[in-house]
Image (tube, rainbow, N blue to C red):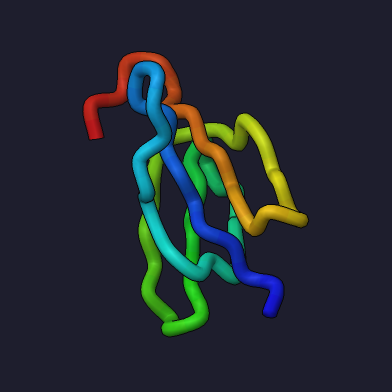
Length: 67
């Protein structure tokens, strides 16, 4: 399987945002994440790191967002 878990940076830690992400679509300053179950989440964030061997997507919220 090629899916990855997405984590959002929260201070000094990384919190799980979504499991088994299959697609990441940048659109209008935000990211649409879709997992293998067809669930979607939208977040105003940028990709900080893709660690594909470790199946990890690290996201950082855009400044000023309180999602």
